[in-house]
Length: 438
Length: 164
Image (tube, rainbow over the protein chains, first blue to last red):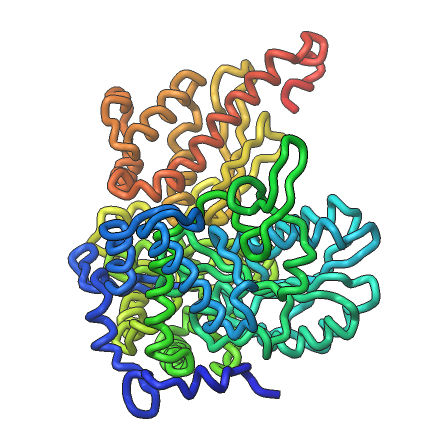
């Protein structure tokens, strides 16, 4: 079984930066204005990409260009500016469809973010199809956004929520998952990559098993779409959600991919302008997909700028990005193991099965303090539960520190993280060295 | 040894390493929780009042918080024990003023002592909640203890029920 489902066409795509598809990170970094910032007198070392990514000037310029030259409402026809805005907005839809490997651009719905996309499915497909006694399966490592909507749906319908476990090495336990499947399971909601453990889930296998049991598959792709080649047809999932801001795009834009047949059969989510067909005093009909799910004026400018982000990613190639991050995470895991015995690492050891997310704890030191001391050296990581409180009960720590990489991070920055942790160790030396029974 | 930053003062590190009164009181007069949902900090503060209910006799606490949060709880447990209720509330207001950069709220009659080490927090708004976690729980505990006394009947008090 292939470790990662790759997209043949994406990997072969011309435009990867150098021969063998390796990234020219120095050139890439020059495209990102914010990477020249200093923080507390130190160069910014931005290792919080799982929270949000930085933006290349191409994306920023696309946003400004829209507002300076052709800002106008979309889909209303009538004048040149409106046509240009509509064309640019729809062009992003086509780009996203191609990027995700969808069959048809109508299968791409723009939302506010991944969370909204997942809620859309819960409130439409979920509300219609989940009944009392049904089961919904999620994994133990879901982000709250791919857990809470299903909790609410299950409670509202009298259905139950089941959790697919992880292996002791924090990989997805496919065997245990398949044992959870039975004719009552109607929906499987699964992350493709954990935002805490970095664990990559074999979604194609999950989908095969789920479909055989009669369940649909909803994928939280918030972490995977920015970092892995994704092809929704190859994965076989029914729905896939991701966020622009985690993949070089602006905030305020999310994507819901849904199989056309499903979207066409679903009731609308939000209703109002733009998503209607005919409207009388008392009744309305709906616009065709995807308009049916895009009520009101959309986030036009940011969708257009998101198109520039997709262009940027495609120029580099997702396979090259994945290879780069694998090297970073391999280096990070090795360095932390060698130089920091006081650090506990979470997530799979095998870089084949993990993305560029490294959650860790420092012995007897709260992650908040770790984050603070790193911040003083210009290093941005995240501390807390990362919107995965149930997962942290499994990890037996209420909070963790998390470093997460992206295409513009360097091996030197990984080393800076290790040196930053030297300072943490110095400041908290006595509590770190304290024997366990105290 | 501390980093050369104002937040991790040696005193804070010392209280974090050797927290005072880190054990909940048996049969407390009140128990209150200070939790920060976003980072997983969770402290329980237990207090026992003096027999006449006028002063805080003892404070015990437990839980999990960052160095700032636990050190603050430790220092609080030392400095507020023995205070009458108005003084305890003056402490809470003063520490709040100290860490939120409102020096006018700090009671000049109070000797902050070890708590001076929390002054660095005022430059880090994100850590204010940590520093005040224990103090806000204390505030709630004082109110709870007060309410319990107010609703206790004279008969119950004679039987010692007011002590919980």
